[in-house]
Image 1: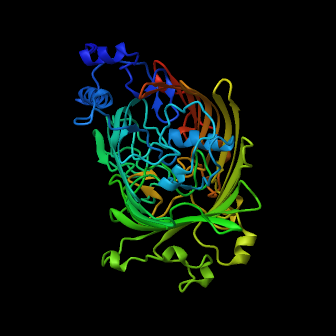
Image 2: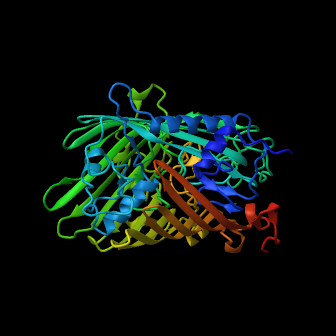
Image 3: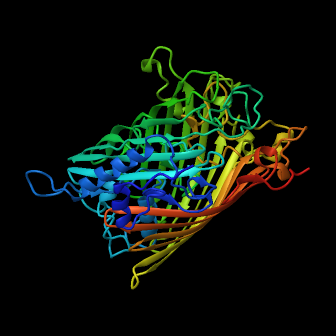
Length: 584
């Protein structure tokens, strides 16, 4: 196929030092699976998804015009700020700064942060990104442009991606655009930051699921979870409200509506309850505006009510939406600086037939034990998840350790919990160590995290299922992607990474392990050597150039027992190929 000629716009962009082969944003340059997307193939200038090149070029020109053009009437530019969203690049950087004492220690288990919390993050000393992260420790501008982000990535063998919000990256090319505007006046904050994406969604060999012409999940194909293997037979895309919110903060309390991501618990990569793997869902919320100091303890919390939507490709056999209510709270003790602990609970309920007036608004506060409920048989038409978490970060030590324990559904009573704490349970452990060099203005972060959601030995006597699984459309997903960790459904995940921050950007070396499915033998027990497990080793480099950010990544990956069959490896020429026979 003939290569497409390079346009004048591309020449202009490349003259600034950027590549348009894989466009601005997450720029993948070699075979592998990136930390957020998979690519198994060589770079190409050939025609791709119809119209996508023009779309990306138009966005780049618009972004450049916004950056360089003064505003009429005042000769001044509207400030461009980088949003600090739950789990995004800047938020992770701020967490490392807080560990070495450059910004004040804060709670990190209920996010996103509100304006009061960001205002308190005044830097006590210069840091590597002082010139770039300017919207912390200061009153937010009345009007600001939320920095445009354009991403173009390719999956040449099969869909792959996690912790990328509402974006679903199918096989082939995926283009993503996000940008918007922020408004701030007194206690009122408005962020309109939608995300538009389109994916080529090319065909690939689906795993058998027992249903002809169906894209539903292969692991539990009976319509138990809305996690399709493919989003239909053709290109797929949509415009999502993205990281948007309207909130009104007083000194103590906040109320609002949002579609932005929530991140609950101390995890950096693999949250049990809520993270940014699927993006946010439309909801109303209320809570404390920032941690409230009560003397002996400081408390912070949030409650929400929202709508969960199905993707339309998961064949769950249920309605396209359900009702969600959830709450999270965290507490710190005055005599134990750096220690915080808390709990979260999330309910999925059928959408009320009589409208929201008939919704179970306070269901999240029902008794924890099933025997205390009006219907102790546990056959209610709901699904719930809950977790307890703890985080310890001694002030200015450069160190933190954290953990989380999660459960699905109720225990019968305290005796049942004491006897079988590992029934339908999960656990997370993680550590971070930060080394800051003030002379060189550099910071190095070494971090590790392990999540285990595997079916335990109790399966011999008490049935268990994969995490986030539920019938009737009450699975823990939003539009076809899980709301918590991407690895929890398959049995767990782990990450080991080294991040180095300098004034020019970030360099990361990381190893990721994702369990994609547990094989159950004829006795309905897990068989460890047949588990579907993906390993990936990645190198990432993010460069800052003026107001722009360019990230490149290259990854080597291998999937063991893909779909409980042969192993799968990536190569520059052949993409994904069978390399061995499945284990016996």
